[in-house]
Length: 292
Image (cartoon, rainbow, N blue to C red):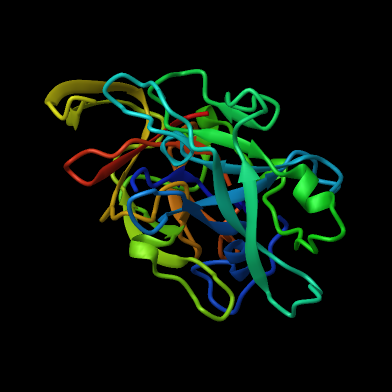
């Protein structure tokens, strides 16, 4: 039986898909990833990324932007807290039949309510302080006919529970693709993200322990240890990859069945189908995909 899956984590720094000619990456994934600009009073806006998920496979559910906590505020890993939230972010959504003729343009998304507090009806933060993950409800933007927003999104059937990773057709040393906007690089034609290559650096499903150094709010380096069940991804991390997905490389795969202890493979190439994860960055350029 063919098994199709993608595993998804987010670089921290910083759908039904159409099959492409390449077996490495489904081209329909690209317009699910969006560029985000974060306001900066002292310089040009910072650039990050995110991706759109849908709560119902029939296309009628809510649509959320998945990104990082540090994209919506001054989240710090040392204390796991956000002391100041951004008032807004600009999300560059893709357009369909837009009167302007543009294939994408910015939509301003307000993060604060009338009392200048985080809008808890739109922005949802992961309850674990040190999981750098945030969801932003963009349903109203997609449903507004004047916005002409394209509907590309990951449906819930593409989200795989973390505990099922070990049973899937993936293992340590498999290649993954990070989709995002490293150093602000993007396609001028359609604003599509850039693809970067990394590797799964831990055995999927295993508990790991990672000693890391981070700067606290005072700028002092502190030693912390990250422990738990994480999907560790080794890759070059640069500003602009924040919030973007990391997907399993497509192509024919083999694995050892954990029950039968025999090698099995797919009968056709695996495409980049999903599981949602959040991450932190270490100075060792290792990303850790934790459970949602």
